Every structure is written in structure tokens, then in C-alpha cells.
Amino acid sequence: MDKGSIRIENAIVHILDSNVGVPVLSDSILEYGSEFGEFLKEHIFRTLTSDEAKKCKFVEGESDVLEYIKEDTDFVTKSKKIAEYLYDIMCSNIAIPAADVIIAEFEVNTMMMLAILKMNYKTSYTHSTSNMDGGNVNSLVVNRAILPTQNQKLSEAAIINLTDYSIRLLEKKYEVNGAKTNYFSEIFMKCNTKLSQKAKLDIVTRAVEQVQKEYYEEKEQFEEKMKAKSVIHEEIVNNGEVSIPEVAERVFEDKPELKERFKEKIEKYNIAETEPIVPVNETTTRKYEKQSLVTDTGIEIKIPMEQYNSTDNIEFLTNPDGTISVLIKNISNIVSK
Image (cartoon, rainbow, N blue to C red):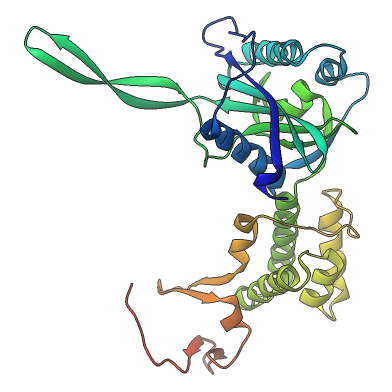
């Protein structure tokens, strides 16, 4: 999908400043121009396409939010009930940051959806001008209710498909009753969550590294780690997805004991091996585009994956004394940066 396919139907903003004691709920929808429309579309698009977003389903009979959405009432009334419910949760748990919440109905690819975007406040400074007897006096004042910009990532947001009530959700843990909790899904939305694509890819990478540390000597680990990173990069580039069985097969090859240990680690996270990981956001895959090495002498080397996979321009050599040399070949020009 592209951002241009998002068509906003209705939008409303409610002020949920838990430091005040009461929410300021709007009685009318927003009148917005093209600038605010782009701001809203950008945050909706980021939530829909983020590899950090989780796929969720409401727990039937337990979710107040789902009941409010299904009620035969107008958009403003529904939004106020949702906002007030969220505000009550925030006031009961002081670690949850104050925010404005934007609720919007929109259409994308003929599907109607509802966005709940929690805009956590940020603190910043702005200027203030006053006129005194001696002339103008300019000063700086602190503003503790600055909203995230168009290019900043939201910590908590939900996009709900109004046909099947499936959810894409972003969230962050905050302290609730003394424990770090995903309150947005567990308490507010009351939905069952699946791991995000980014979380799954991170788990696979971490599981590979853990197995390598268990079975390889320290001097062998860097080569094995580079090999695994190269395999994952090739999976993404060639197939647009990462197959967990394929990663295990290519990384551990003829070592069944290592494959089994890797499988055990993956199973602990309840990840289905047969379900491919499909990252779509460049920020998720960027770290697999280069090999980053640091030697014990403090030298840092970054190698584009295309160069690493070719011995024409770079080669790793093991010396008779056990040390390693990195040979960079066919250089016609060097630029200092």
C-alpha cells in the first residue's frame, strides 16, 4: 500500500493529561486542511507498515474498546468513550505518560478502519514576548505538552479493521502495579498479540548467535556470525522474506546437533518455523546490509554485504600464529571521511 491510498473520513482529538485530573473531550470532529491531513496519514501509514507492529485479535466478551466500536452510536460518542476509558487507565497508573489521543475513521483499499493514535507529550521550549516599560522582553518558556512530529515514531497506536476487527498495534511497556506491562494490549485493548516481524527477526538472529557462542571457540565466532548475517541478508534480498528452516540449514549445514539446539531456542518463543518472517520496513533490514567488525586493536571495518560475498575485493586470512589478517584488494582510490 502507499500513503496516497489512505482517505480520512473523520478525525477527533481528545486531551488526556493525567496531571490535570479530568480529560478534555472534544464534542466535534476536527476541521483539518492538507497539512494536518498529511500529518495524520503519515502516522497511520507508519503504524500500518511498521515491522514493529503486532498483529492482534480482540478477546471476545472482554474488550470494552471492541464494544464501544460496535455500538450503534455516532463517531464522536464512540471516540469519547474510548478516550475516557484510556484516560481512566492512565490515571490509575502514573508511569503511563500523559497524551492527546487522535481517533480517526479512514478508508484504505476499500476497507474501513479506525485509528487510535496516542500522542505522548514531549517537553520543549518556545519563546514568549511581553511588552514592558523599557520595551520588548523576550524569554523562553517550557512547554510540556508538545506532540510528536510527523516523522517521529509513536509508542502506542492501534489500527482496527472495521470488517473483521483485526488489529495492528504498536506498544511500549510501562510500570503497572510494580511490573513492566504491555498495558495498551493487555489492559486497554484487551487483545491477544503475536510477535512483530522485527521481534521475530531479532529472535532468530539472537538464537543463531547463542548457538554459535555455545559451540564455537571465540576466534571462530566472528566468521560464523558473518556467515549467518550474510544468509539472512540473502534471504531478504532474494525472497523478500526469511525462512527459519532455510536459515538453520544454510547456517549450520551438516551439524544436526546445532540445528536442533537452534530449533529448541526458537520454540521457546512460540514462533512457528513454517511461518516466514516478512520484514517490509527498510529500518528493519538495514543492519543486515553491512558486516561491521571491530578488532582487538581498535580498528573498525564496515563491509557492504555484496563485497563480503565476493573474494575479489576482500579476503580473511588465518596466519600460522593464529592471528587473522584482512586483505582488501583491487583498490584504485581511497577517500578519507
